[in-house]
Length: 395
Image (cartoon, rainbow, N blue to C red; front, side):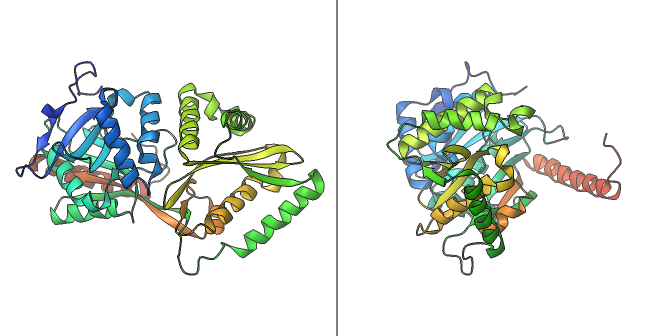
C-alpha cells in the first residue's frame, strides 16, 4: 500500500514546490492527473509540441488517456519541472512502490501504461540537465524513505537520457544498468542501412505473389486522415480476438481497461494526425491490420493483428514490409518497431536498432545511498548464484 496520502487529501499545488536557491532556477511541482487545471493542461500540450518528437507515448494526449484508464492511475504523480510561473521544461510520471523486484525496499519508478513501449520522459532537450538536477534534488529531500529512482524503457541515445547519465556522473550519483537490449528500428540517414535484408525481402515478395495467385488481389490501405476510424478499430479488435491472443485471454478486448485505452488513443491519435492505421486485404478480406504513431522525427509501432488462417503467407510481415518502405521515403523519419526481444526477422527487415535501457539511480540521504549500494551488490550476488545453479528454485 502506498505511503502517499489518499488522492482526496493530496494537495497538488505550489505549496509542494521545491524551489532551488536561485529564484530563476526551475522548481519541482508534484501534481495528480485528476487535479490538473486548464493552465496545467495547456502547459502540458505546449511541452508536447516542443519535446514530444522522440517519444510520442510521452505526449499529453497519449499520457492523459493512459492515466484515465490505468487501474493505478490515481496513484501516479506528475513531477513537473518549471521556473516559478514559467513554462514547463519537463514532466515525468512517477509511482512510489514498496518493492524493487524481490527486494522489499521503497523506491520511485517512472510509470508507463500498458502497451506503452518507451519510457523516456517528456523534457525539452536543451533543458534536460536542469530537469534531472532539479528532480534529483527534490527526490533527495523527500522523507518517504525511497532509496532509488528506477527508470525503465529509456532510449539510450536520446539527449534526455544522455543528460541523465551525465548528471549522475557529475554528481557522483550511483547509476546501475538493470537491463539493456536492442530493439529493431530504422534509422534515417544511417549509412549502409539500405532496405533491410535482401534475402528476407525476396522471400516476402514470393509470399505476396503466392498469396495473390491463390486467394485474389492483395491490397494495402492506409485509413485517410479525414475518414472515421471507429469501423477500423472494431475490425482490429475482432481480428485480434479471433487468434491466439483471444484464446489465451491476452487480446485487447479481453480486458475492458486495456480495450478502452486502445480505442481512446487510436481515436485521439487519428484526430490529431499522429496515428496511422493500415489494413492488408486479399480478395477483399482483411487479413492483417497494424497501427503506429508518428511525430516529427520518430515513428513507433503500436499494435498489429493478423488472420491465422493465412499464417503461411506471413501477412503481418507483408504489412510491416510496406510500412518499412513508406517510412524509408520520409526524409528524416526514423522508426522504432517496438517489437519484443528475440524477433530476429524484424531485425532483418528494419536493418538497425534502438538501444533500450532500464536503470537505477541512487537518491535520498547518504544513508539511503549506502542502502542503495548494498542492494545493488545483493542483486549482483544473487544473479551470480543463479547463473551457477540455473535449475535451482528460488526462495
